[in-house]
Length: 67
Image 1 (spheres, helix red, strand yellow):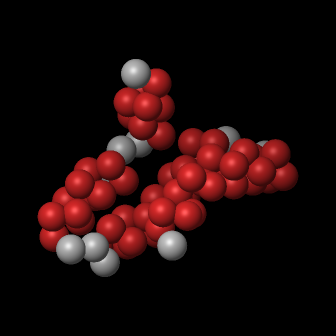
Image 2 (cartoon, rainbow, N blue to C red):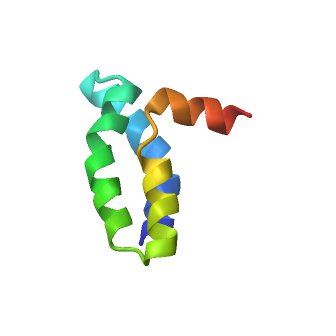
Image 3 (cartoon, helix red, strand yellow):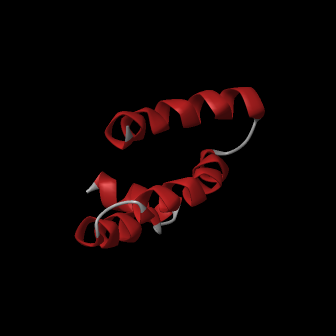
């Protein structure tokens, strides 16, 4: 399920932003605890990589993915 929902996150964020008036950064931050919890369910080798990515702020992720 994780593989399916992650690509949909930007679309969901855009839809919520349009409806709620929240910034994309606020929406990203509000979903971060759930994503971190999902990481905790992974085997240890995958968990650390997942946690590293999910601890990024919105601006850090934007910079990393823009490269």
